[in-house]
Image (tube, rainbow, N blue to C red; front, side, top):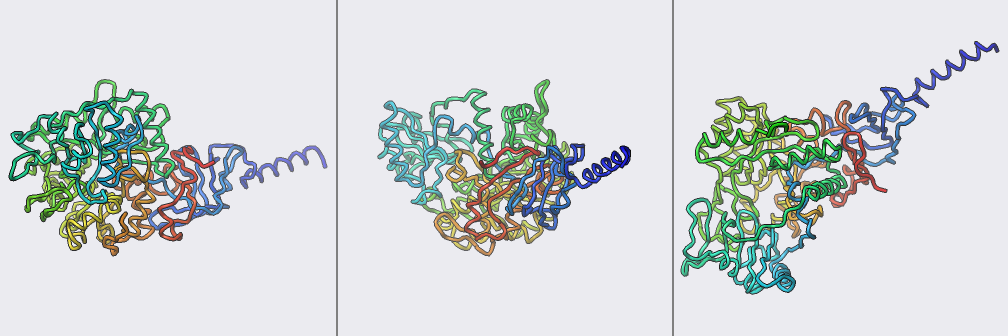
Length: 586
C-alpha cells in the first residue's frame, strides 16, 4: 500500500468516526450534557415520554431515543446515566415570599408550634430566658393549625406570661395579652376610625386581646435588620434548599424594589439558582388619581437602574410579572371575603352572625385602575381567597374588558381557594387562570370544615373542576417563613403539594371532597407547564423540548407509577438550571 493510499484510508476512517458521533471533536453542535437511560417526562402537549436529552449552553437541543443523541457527543460532553430514573422539567412554585422567608431564621430556628398548650410552654421558656418585661413574639401561628382548632384566649396568654407583653401574630388578625395591651395603651376607649378593630367584650367593653387589622397599635420593638451581605447569603442558601427539592422557578409575590435589586445583583454575579418572576403590589389610594400616581411610582426606577415594570420587563432570570392587588383576607384568620357568613365560633373568635370577612379593595376605583394598568402593559392579578372576593375581582376584570381587551393577558386569581360555579364561565370568557396553594387544604382543611360544614367545603379548592372546565391553574406554597420544606408555617415542599392534590388528605387524616383529586399527569403539570403558561413563560420552560431552557430534575422514583403515598417522599438526585447543575447528590 502506497503512502497516499494509506493516508486516504486514514482520513476516511476518521470521517466515519466523526459522522457517527464516536470520538467526535467538540464543535458548535456538540452537547455539554447528554442524559441517557432515563424516563423523560417531557410534559409537552402530549405528555410524551422519551429516553434521552442533550443540552448545549442553557438550552435543550435534542430529546428522543438513546441512538438519536450520538451526533451530539463530543470529547468534553458529560454523559449522565440516569439508570432508568425519571427526568422531568424543573418545578415552578407560583407563589413564595422568598426575600422575607430567607432571613426568617437568620437569628435562630423558628419554633415549631402546633397547639396552644405548646405555645404556652414556649412562652414560659422565653420568660425565663429574656430580661424582665421583654416582648415575646409568636409569628404566623394560625388558629386552624392548632390542635385545639382556635385562637388562644386572653386568659391563656396571661397565664403563660403575666408580666411580659405577648404578641401572637397571624397576619390580618392578632392576639395580645394584658401586658401587651397595657404597654401599648390599648383600652376600652381605643377606637379605629376605618379598616381595623379593637375587639371588645360586649358587656364590659374591655379589649379581648383580639385585634383585627390593627396590629400596628401594638408598641412592638423593631426587629434587628440583617446586613446586605447577610441577606444575600440567606437568599442564596434558601434557593439551594429550593433546588434540593427540584424547584427551578418561583413567583415572588409582593416584590419590592430592594428585593428585585438583590435578585438582579445575584443574577449579574451568576449566583442565582432559581428563576424569579416578580409581581408588584399596589395598594389603592383614596381616589383614582392617587391610585394612578402609585402605579407610576411602582414602575419607575432610579437613574441607572432597570425599571420595575410593566409585566415582561427583565430577562429569563429576573422577570417582572403581574400587578397585584389585595382583595380580601385569608382562611387562616377567618378574614377571607365569603358569600355567606363564616359563623360564630372560637376558631377565629367571631361573635357577629353576619361576619363574612373583609373586602380590602374599593370596587369603585379598582376597575378604572385595572383598565389603565392593562393599557400600560401590565398582566393583572389579585390576592383573592373568598368566593365573594372572586365575584368582585371578576366584575373588575369584566369592566376592564370593555375598555381594553384583556382576554390574551392571562389575568389571574391569586390564592384562589373558594370558587363559585357561576364564575368559571366568566374566567373562560376572559381567559383568566388561577394560582392555588394545596398545603392550605392539608394544614387548614380539617378545622375549616368544622367551622363551615361539609356543604360549603364542596367548593373549597376544587382543583379538578377548574381543569375540567378548560381553565389553567398552577400550584404554589405561599412560603413566607421558616426554611424547612415541611415544618415551615406554609410548607413549601412541592412533592407534598402534589401528594395533596392526588389524595385531598388533611394533616388530621380526614379527606376533603376526594372527587376533586387530580391525576398524576395533572399534578405534574400543576407545578411545571401550567405555571409557566400563567406567566407567559411556556415558550421557554415548563416542559423538556428542543429550544427550551435546560431546567430539569432527576428524581429517585417513577412518580407516575409509584404508590401514591410515596409521592410526597420523592428525593431529587440532580437539579439543572440553564444547563448548569446547581444540585447533585453525592
